[in-house]
Image (cartoon, rainbow, N blue to C red; front, side, top):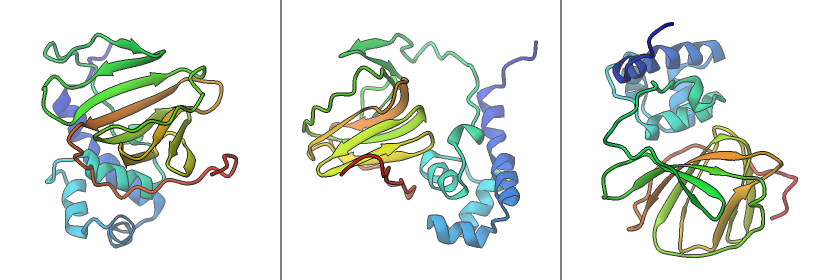
Length: 199
């Protein structure tokens, strides 16, 4: 059995995967820069391993190339004893904390069952960012009603009436970042409107 890759090894794999994916799509650095708003020098350093990858960079790049994040990032199976691994069930949803610090924003992995599909819009302080890992996520935000698939993201001010839940007959798995103080996560990834859901 092969050993699982270390964290450092997993990060080292990102740069060559990005370059291969871009070249396979026939996209130049200049074209990718125009699509994402990220400078060509930053993209070049990212692909050569001279720039540390971050979600803020990877999300718009994978979106522009039509890729899922997990096609570029393969997380090592390492259990950090400092990070709580126990899950909690809240209103039928499974929440798995991914951060140990008490400061904001906090990161969670969330699994939402298909039974949780009745919209209940609410408002509260803070700012939330959602990234769909698996399944389909319905997001209602004010007068907007959209469905997101794997690799798509949404961010919003929680003072706007909102609700999100499973769209379809299967669980939806979501990465959530939430800040009570309203910290905004700047990304350039676009989402597409689902014509089957009325707005």
